[in-house]
Image (tube, rainbow, N blue to C red; front, side):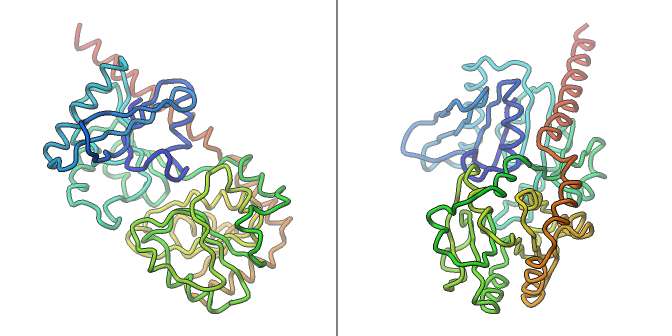
Length: 371
């Protein structure tokens, strides 16, 4: 499998890492990231990770024009295929923007795993929409990261499958047994209302500022990298604590010390189709959860009474108060039933079946054509 991703493997552990790491257990995977420009010659830097995973980072000379960039990357991809003797590969895309240097390949199958409406993100290039249209025609299957995205894409391709964000229950259940806080969280008083994830244009920073003002006796823990927004724009207060990014394996240690988990997402174009992976992760950790009315959180989590939904700062504060008063045993019972049929392992297996069937069909067609 050759995976083309706009997200870097070592950034935040999320959907691509969960799925691609599982594919790498039974096939070689080359996870190609966006290029880095440096003072040197064009080259592919390949690092071997667990199982059969290879993380590939293209490096190009500073000053490369857009045309030189695409042609240079095409050459590097071809060299990668030759050097590693890649045959009968599957092309797996997280972004249509890499078509410029991969559309010439002849994969046995093509998958577009659409986890966001990328065209709605800040600074999205204009050609993204055209490239996505082309990728939709090339793809054998289109997978979507949530119900809203599925509804937006299902009329545009004959094989669109909804695979919402899933969960590694065992990993996040470790939060229930945490006895001691990490060093940088120890001194933060309770009650603690926490968030982990990327802090960017999808975050409602005005909401965060106002709820912190409304309840100065509550403490808001923010874990994650700050991306595409200025650090100076972050609301600052004695009860807002930015702890930076943490490793995926560390998250249960932090979450285990929270009283409530929150998802203060802004309601804008960049959040219209998101299906936050953290929703089931918070629930598996045993926490009550409060979120703004993101569509894929309202359906099904809000409708099932698993997540408190609030829009205004005043409503958000009230919802947190309600969340802290929830019957934990009753919530855990309902959460257990809801999450019982969800796992990244199951999602992977269903995707792999579709992928292998598409690859097999392509080979049969090619064989018939050759004869």
